[in-house]
Length: 516
Image (cartoon, rainbow, N blue to C red; front, side):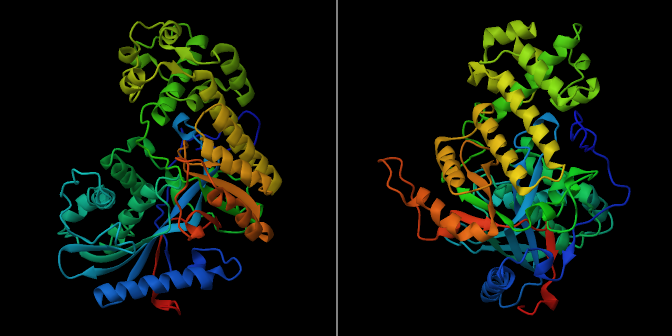
């Protein structure tokens, strides 16, 4: 992977290199290694939560947990919706997370309890790695996805030849990540369960980060989310305060510490769920197909021998790959998109003519979900979708130049405008919420995650946090027309909350913690 602050150079995922020295998930011994202390939050908020989890664990199992496993929610500051085109986004792990307390069990069983027992009743699984996923759509499949992903790893296969047997566990889950809101709740849970499985079975120093990432992507396939892959940047910590943005060689090493001192993210839930499976082939998967088609159409413009019916001859699968191969700048890419790709959308006959194809589904059969997308849509916004990706990749480039908070806010605002106008993945509720955030002095505000609902993320001065949250709360409390009401409880922290950047996935050994 390359990152550059020079004009025209893309930050791409196409050329990621594997580190020569294996790296492993860290084990910490104090909460200050994981969370940022904001006005005493380390003691008042985080210690209190872990202490409560410890007490609940003791009530259930009559013993203290041995370790805590932690995987954070993530928000995309810049680079929204560009990874499928081969460009690098910039995501930050935040305080909100999944925490699993556990101890080993003497029986070959996994006892699972959740802090929200009404929604997630107790489950008891055996430790058999080959056990089947449940046929019904249930949360326990996310647990099994993380567990089975590790148990099917190359390392475990090697360990089995040496007599490896999976251990039983007693676990207690506490998650602060809202569901289906663009904060990677399902992904974070699978990552946490996989890390739990590694640590409990003595694999924490045997499965390195590269293999762990492969395991997570395997687990995502188990639940039908193969398009939702992670890369090594998901494991990076963004907590350190002294790593500079400027001249960073790899974007996954870039840290927000200097840029965001004195500022926090505020996450606001629009209360319109951003389901991965709602509008499955008319939303996100449609955009992925549109981007592949944009790549093909541009390649055909500059190579008249480019034949889409010959998959082997179609060497470009992403805009980033096409840009790098031809050494085009972002400005050149945008010029080509504007001059070569029709604005306002293509009908199916127009696309068939542009692609010189009598059967797009057959000719593009290597494009994932082409059949379903083609059957469920009548117009394809090739120009607009590609325009968003390239302008957003430009914003990532700008972010690498050590922006001031004001410049970062401007990037976030520009991102939201493009997500709304070009990528068309905002919603009426998100637009209302983001406008309210901007009216109350957010430096920048945008949607985060899959879009079409979910959460917004705003950059706000720490000194203005309380006033900002109180003002934005009117989104939840105002009267609305019948059928448009937001059903909320009195717990405001569930809907709008501030957060700092944090450590990535990790293990906490609590034996030296005073609260423990």
